[in-house]
Structures are given as structure tokens and as C-alpha cells.
Image (cartoon, rainbow, N blue to C red; front, side):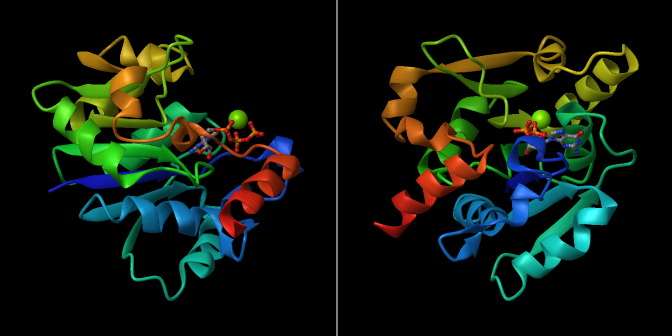
Length: 204
Ligand SMILES: Nc1nc2c(ncn2[C@@H]2O[C@H](COP(=O)(O)OP(=O)(O)OP(=O)(O)O)[C@@H](O)[C@H]2O)c(=O)[nH]1
Ligand SMILES: [Mg+2]
């Protein structure tokens, strides 16, 4: 059994202060696209958000076949590490796939592969040839990563990589990723322009 945690507690400042999680992407709210994609690979879906986002996200998910549990931030605006902490604490399976709400190209076959690779470790984290860790599209042992996130926040740190330093993880390289997904899986939407480009991809 496995879970997906969708992180949606950010302020979308580059998006013009409207919540990108619920923005329309070719007829469907972005977060709903993400939830319906990850649902193909997991047994349960948790959405992390602020309390004030909850009603709008629930309405974006209305009528979806994907059952959702919500994990609200204890305190808002503490960064993605705090979002992971809240989301992972709500997980009741050993492992969870964590994904940002603004990654509508996320691909279920890659998720399944990351779950396989994570077995026996605290996490399996994609790392592309550019050296970048894709921490918001990775599989974590939920309890271990939640503890690491708490320790990171307690130390006054905010980077997800600071939490990674506190667990035993493996990286999954670009070649292995390409066998299961196109690199577009990691594309995230920060601006209105990026939303328009993504919409063109979904409409064709
Ligand atoms: N819970 C929580 N999640 C966050 C926070 N900041 C960012 N995130 C989430 O982390 C992921 C990556 O963040 P960004 O791409 O920077 O999104 P964002 O912060 O909403 O957008 P910008 O304001 O433009 O940086 C997204 O899924 C966000 O929802 C936060 O303070 N709290
Ligand atoms: Mg941000």
C-alpha cells in the first residue's frame, strides 16, 4: 500500500498571487490533474495546504473519483519542508510519493519505479544530470522524512535538501528516469506564461 502527498501550501507569488493549485489548465484545475495522475500509482492521496485554501481546493476536486484526505499546515508560510512535514504525518503507509501541486505532467510509471527503488531506504530521489535534486517528485519513508523535516525546522533551516541530509536516501539518475518517463514530468508551473505553454501541450 502506498500514498501520494500533494504539496499545495505555497503562495504562488510568481503566478500573481492567485492560487496556482486551483488554476484552470485546459479545462481542469492543475491540482486535480496531479491528483488524478498520481491516483493511478497509489492507494491514497493526501493534500497539504493552508486552512484558507481548503474550500477552493475541495471545490476543484469535487466529483473526482480520487478520494482525498487533507493535511493542513500547522503554521502557514513555513516553506515546503513544513508542508512535507504536515503531509507526511498524515500518511499511514510506510512509503509516500511527494509531489508539488504545480507539476501536471507527473507520470504514474515513474512513481511506481521510484517506489520500487526506495525499498530498503528512507527515500529515492531523482537527480538529473544538471545535479538538481527533484525533492518534490520523490518517494520517502514517511516517518523518517517527517522526523527529518521536523529536525530541519527545529534547526532553523528551510531547504528540503537539509532534510535529505538527515535521512538515508538513494538518488535515481537521469538515464533510469528516462526509461520510465519523459523529463517533462518535472516541469512545474510558476507563471501565467508557463500555464499557457502547458495548456497548449494538453490541448494537442
Ligand atoms: N505548506 C507549504 N507549502 C509550500 C510553501 N511554500 C511552497 N510550498 C509548496 O512547495 C512547492 C514548491 O513551491 P513553489 O514552486 O515555490 O510554489 P509557491 O511557493 O507557491 O510559488 P512562488 O510563491 O511563486 O514561489 C509547491 O507545491 C508549494 O505549494 C509553504 O510555505 N508552506
Ligand atoms: Mg516558492
